[in-house]
Image (cartoon, rainbow, N blue to C red):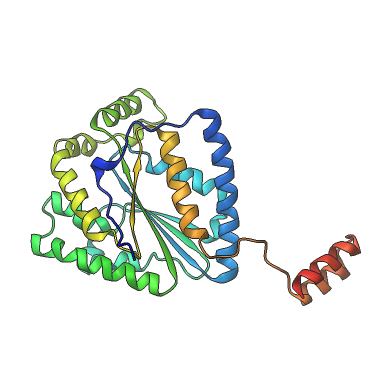
Length: 275
């Protein structure tokens, strides 16, 4: 069996683009697929976890919004992850993620994640080296436990160039509707880009496993990145699962037949599918 090959940042082609017409056509198709996947997850009790990592202004939030448009919020939750409060600082770093994992039939998206342990905590020296190095094994064990428990995991890293990032910072500064996204930390983080690249590549090498592989998203073109990411999610979440609309039980059909003014042929057709 071919062993999984971890991706590298240098392998991502940042020149890839997608035209407007193709983008909207594919977006509609993928959103329809996501809606079917959510229904199938609810019926089968399957759980899904989405991990979004990447450079500042790389397009994680825009992709999450397009996914959210397709899904019922009652079984889809987005968790924006920032610095832990004191309660979690005094406990194992994985605790706050355990508490936010989806119940049966639901999907949780993490905008930043437990990978902060081997990224920002490593770079900022918030965590001793022996602890963040030990986190590679802990994270792999954590994700394997989730998969063994029936959870599907998709891990996406949004990769852009330094020049593209600066252009997006400029756009945020000029646009009053996006200005709130720009912070001092965004500029401070740029000063450690080279160090962060080393950390990201080691993260990809150490935690892209057969059961929970990483997908690097070339994100210089926002439209291409959104479609690439959503396609990766659809491919992973739809594998080996029946996406056909689920059958109604006979009790529900009996009640529908009695209460609703519908064509009897529709009820009969649905009964035949159930049988």
